[in-house]
Amino acid sequence: MSHVIGIDIGTSGIKVGGMNANGELGFIEYEPYPLHHPKKGWVEIDLEDIWGRTKELLLKVMKKIHKDGCIEAISLSSFCNSSVFLDKDGEPLYPGIMYLDQRSKEESEWIKEVVPEDKIFEITKNRLEQGMYSITSHLWFKNHQSTKYKQTYKWGNLSTYILNKLTGSFVMDWTQSSFSGMYDVEKYEWSKEICDEVGIDMEKLPEVVDPCSIIGYLNCSDIPVSGVPVIAGGADTACSTLALGIQPGGVFESVGTSNVLTACTEDLSLLDKRFLNRCHIIKNQWLSHGAMSFPGAAIEWFYKEFLKEENDSKQILESLPMRSKVGSNGVFFLPYMQGERSPIWDPNSRGTFVGISLNTTKADMLRAILEGCSFGIRQIHDIFTETYKFKYEKLQSIGGGSKNQTWAQIKSTILNKNIEIKSVSETGVYGACLIAGTSVGYYKSLEEASSLIENKTTQLIKPNLDELNTYSDHYKVFNELYPSLKQFFAKSMEL
Image (cartoon, rainbow, N blue to C red; front, side):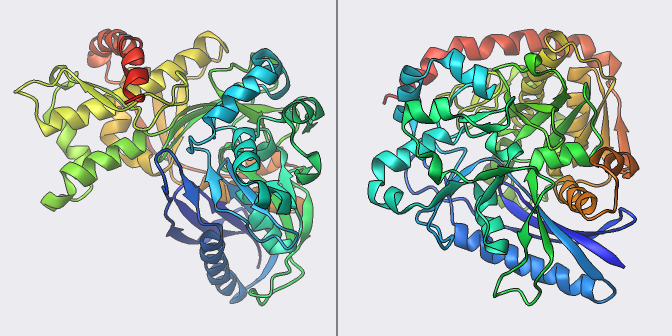
């Protein structure tokens, strides 16, 4: 039976899988990879290491598929964004600079002086923040690595690098380019106006392509298969949106290192600058991401620092919070472990426990983390319901963090929404496969592909009605914490 292959490169790991013509996903292979922190505030990726790991996983999946079928196409899903600088042979001149990277603060402030923020939002439908929108990292490299910048043939994202390794092409799909800070999301083209104003050489920018376009054919000396069509694919959350069949007006949740609520719309005027906004895979639809950076990372941090050495399995992350009551015995937690995006957009903010007493237990602290992360998602949810006027009764939830039933229950009650835990969490791989399958004729359209895929609900989490009022009162207090500490965070970063 014929298959297509989806490659999904997330913030901390790589998944590769295959899908047959019946829409059945399988052959999943996974491997984590590290982030690197060479200096305070710097976050990088080793591009050659990631390519090596991706290639090995791809070879494993190809071998499995070839036992009983053939490979029709390959497509890519990857996180946004990571600035990469490539020579004419597609080799990296510098490590990839992650979206979490804070080194380009001066460049960000300078761009805002040169191009009014209202103009930036009018064109890109995004605000400008260092690292998060790659124009700032691009300029940092130009200013601080001038010799290597002159050697740069093409700048791009991680997807640009991986697709070049597979085919030799230098491209970027529009779901990725719309997170660059220099792309016109209505006209679907690089903004000459912004590039001219800030001094970016547009010849160094890759061609922007439709996520469903064939950008070349597999041609890699390390892979003993050639001639397979390679499809551009898209950003991981955009691919997940497709795999979950989210329609305009719909919202879903992804829970991993970050915790993101994603909404789909056909109305460009709705897009709010408190969110990260991008072109969807389907043209003339846009995605709005309410993205909290570190909820999952905060939970992992607490486990590693305070629970793991006691030989506790990760099951304790569900059982321990149950030993504390609603409200965590008076403890509140701000989940801003290394700055935050939606909705506060403050790189200076940090994780904070408030209300600790001599009676505070580990259970209280862990429950406070789960509640604080859920209150943060409530702030994003309220913007979608109050500003976007979206009405939805249920929230589909995917990602490793969605499996924590205690957290899901707390979140369901704080949001007062049913949460559906989906059976297939590999929606980045799935979405990439749907793009590839549509491009080679498995489906007539992306819309048909989305409608035919069955991703069952493994659990339905309902709000605890007895706790609604209590959490509503605690939410009001939570909303006062960050404004009270904002100046403290700013001053502490000057020390």
